[in-house]
Length: 563
Ligand code: ADP
Image (cartoon, rainbow, N blue to C red; front, side, top):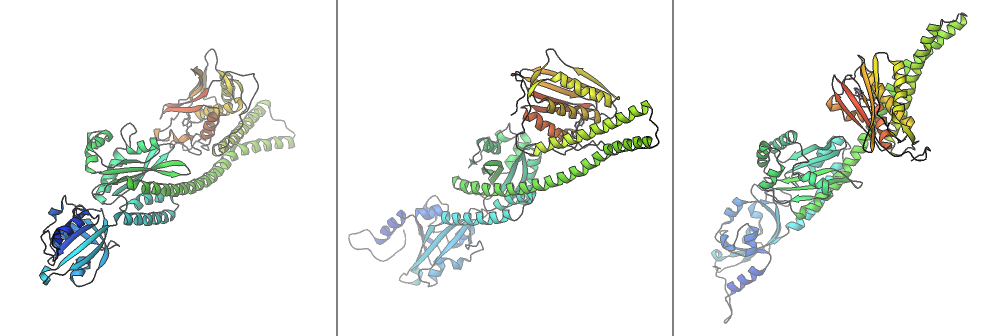
């Protein structure tokens, strides 16, 4: 220490070295400055606070030099004039000034807070005056205060809207820049797996790059990915320091690796978006340019944000589903009443025709009567199908188990019965049935399986407007039996293949073909209730094959049972 402070009793160490020893052992950062603002003394805590490896590196630095390195902020984040610093105020004559000072290294967002107190040590002349400043680090206190405030604000923002898409974007927006430099929201969708739905970034160029990565290289579960890891573990995944090895593991090709490097990810934290005990998706926080780092202290806050965001997403999703259900119901009623009108009009037309013949006391000839009766039969058949579709579709929504009437069922017999009816209805299609020996027999609900088959064969006929062959096969592989229905019709576009099992979903290529979009949804539910599944393979313009797989259970006593 080079200052000349008076004092020191005989026989003891000089006052200055005693002071030095005291300051070195205190936890608070202490600096001593002269009137010109030069640092004359600093303890190790001050060196650490100001990013130096030893206190000696600070000696001789001027206030101006430090201000070039650091930005001074008021507690509300506005710039703080240097004259407001307690050291300057003490030099200006104020007794024991103190204030909370927020500061950060220029260009970084890693804010720190200190409660700064200053005292003037008057020298013999004004030139020898010194000012001692003590900095009590209150960063963690301030951080927890601002985290609580952040959570309260985030909850308020998330509660503002029940619009699903907007809520997802808000989740991402609330986290930036407060918690991270960028934030990504992924949700789990049962048809597509993980779907990246929102992204927010401090910097527009970074957002552009992140968006590019998102669309060109969607997350690949076969490569390393923190999101997949979090979903597997169902708990937060923290990567405090992203290494180049990690990027290489995650990259899908060389170009991807180059772009990942440009993203400059330093720290990553992925937490679950949770609601009602279920993981709905993932919230990913990334620190890049700001110089901040994510650590264990951030995990709890992020998990809490994930919970609140999960709840908001859950509400938005429920509202969306309710609206969607109402829309589907209305659409269904419109379609079903339209579809029912045609067969009803046919039945009424023939009834009126018969009535007129009766009034005129003339009997129709046998051939005409046969034609009328066949048309009435077709119309009633169509109505019956519509009613069954409606009933099966109501099963799709209701989550309760419906009692099945299980009994020994021979698949080939079912196939033959359904085909016989369609042979009468359509003379443009050829039906081919292939059944192996021994025939698959199992404990299934025959009436409901007949409805599924009826729907598949009905579709095969309906979606092969030019006729062609409809081939039905039954068989068994291991402990699973199958029925497949193959047509030579219009096929199903790849983008529709998973979706056609959703209620009211119809393919993009079926314009002009009557239908409700309910048949497959109901069929899938019925088959799943029997422990089976339905698969589809298709080629647009060439045809489709639907295969129903069923578990084979040895026929029990032959009695029908329910589950
Ligand atoms: P609907 O037949 O009333 O439209 P479904 O639920 O039975 O309802 O089928 C849903 C959609 O699946 C159909 O609209 C159609 O796009 C597609 N689809 C089903 N079966 C076939 C098939 N055999 N060939 C081509 N498309 C099919």
